[in-house]
Length: 403
Figure 1 (tube, one colour):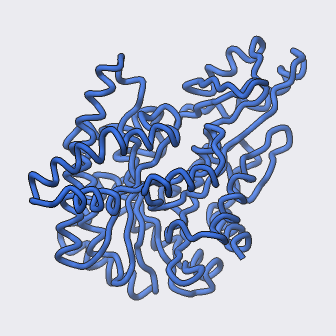
Figure 2: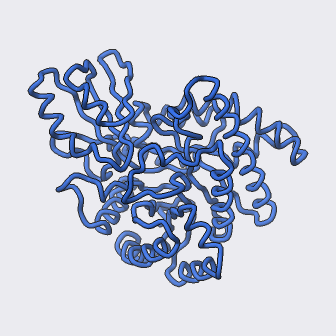
Figure 3: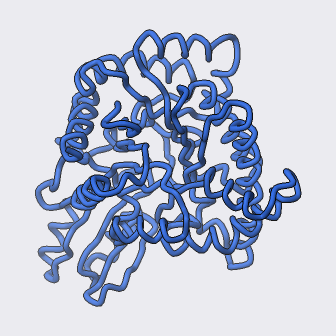
């Protein structure tokens, strides 16, 4: 929904289970009209569309795309952003690190992303920018040493530049500006501001400019500008809170480097202060065990009294050393409802969301805002409530706090 001129707020439809286009379309038909009525008061409603690889292929055949466009027009809806991070199954199965498969070292990831952009170019209304968020290149621990890691970054960069070539072509044909929005997260090859800046400086700009100068006969300046225009940052509030980075500092660092913010994903992580006594730690363990579920990765990043960080690949690994840890705080990658500040014994990083929304009142760093709480079906008992009511409440909370 439009909050003000040029700014769009939605939720990511990866919340709804379903990998085929038929399932995806059915979910949109079942949920969007009521959410639009309650949250947007029947005003035009922007959709944050998630298409699996399977759904993206099915949407391109047998008139399905035209059928979808007709439904969008009839329901006063539009698509302005997509989530292109999860390629395959995302619900009802063990996802964990497979959410990165196939990674950006592969042609499958490149081809899937280009297909999504072809669809978005068809769906996006005139006069709007469109964006697709994506994986932070690959999962760090799949690459055993620095040499393997650098090979992965090189291949990933090459494939992303192929996407830029496609987006330049789309802009020339349609006038529409589309951008690929890289989403850093813990244990991705890119997981914080420093790594994102280094990727641009050491890989994306030099390699990409060289390739575009060769393939499209562009000048170096035009090539670098095209890369910055078409590859941006997806700022997931939860993910940057996990690495203890403050929104204002991130936004200003990106602005200084000329890196645009393509999308802000509004999300909250769990956080908890770690007590010293064994008895209190036992209570913490009992509180956190229900969150150590088997579907998604729940990375933990702890901070000690000196501000040094220590990371764990999943919550169960952190819980295994809870009795011995000297860390003072844990932040846990578990997207919890954004409208709640605490859950009894544990709190959330909601304050980071409020800082982001306050910053947006000063400077409109992006046109695209997307609530991304996708864990409703794996939340511990007592926290899992009606999906539609939850989505409406989240959108209303964000809208109210932006006023």
